Length: 289
Image (cartoon, rainbow, N blue to C red; front, side):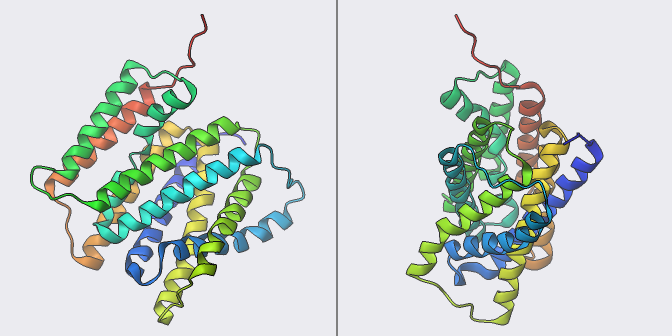
C-alpha cells in the first residue's frame, strides 16, 4: 500500500476520535456490564461489519501464517484492552487515555528484552523524559495510590507486547486478513466468559451504548491499522494523542471535570518523550561478532 501522509494523518485523527468515543461509552455504561462482555460485543459487532468487506474482496485469502504467534498477539491486545476499560471505569477519562498511551515508551524496552534490539541514546532519553511525565501526572506527593493508574499503565504494557509480536510476524500479512483474524479470535476467546455469566442490559440506553462501542471500536481498528500502512509511525502515533485532548473535552462536557495544571504539564512531557523516542530512538539490530 503506497504511503500517503495526508490520508494517513486524517485516518489517525479519525482513529483518535473513535478511540475516545468508545471509552466514553464504556465510562457511561460503568460497571453495570462486565468488561469481558463489553469486549465481546465490541469484536462481535466488528466481525459482523467486516464480513461484507471480506466477501466483496476478490483477493482475500483465509491463509494464516504463524497462527500461534498471531494468537499470542491477540491475547496480549485483549488483556491490554481489558485493563484500559477497567482503568476508564475507575479514574478520569483523560488520565486513563494518557497513561495508556505510554505504549511507545514501553515498546523499545520490551523489544530489547524480547529480540535484543538496541535503543539509541536519544531513545533512552525519550523514555526517561516520558516516564518523568508519567510521574508528574500521577503526582505521588499529593495523591493516594490509584488502581486506575496502575491498570492504565498495565494496558500500555500489554499493547506494547502486542506491537512487538506484530513486528515479529512481519509485514507479509494483508490489512483485511489481519483485521479479520484479530476480530474472529477475539470474539472466540471472549465467548466462554459470556457463557459462564452474561448480564442482560437493563435499559435501551445501555443497549445503544453497547452497539456504539462495537461501531466506533471497528472504525478505530480499521483507521488506525490503515494509518500505519499509509504514513510513518513516527507521524501517526503523536497524532493519536489527540484522544487525550478529546477525553478532556468530553470530561468537561459530560462530567464537569477540568484537567489540572499538573496533568497538562505531565501530558506535554509525555508527548515530548514519545516524539523523541519515535524520531530519534530508532531501534537498532544487535551487531554480530
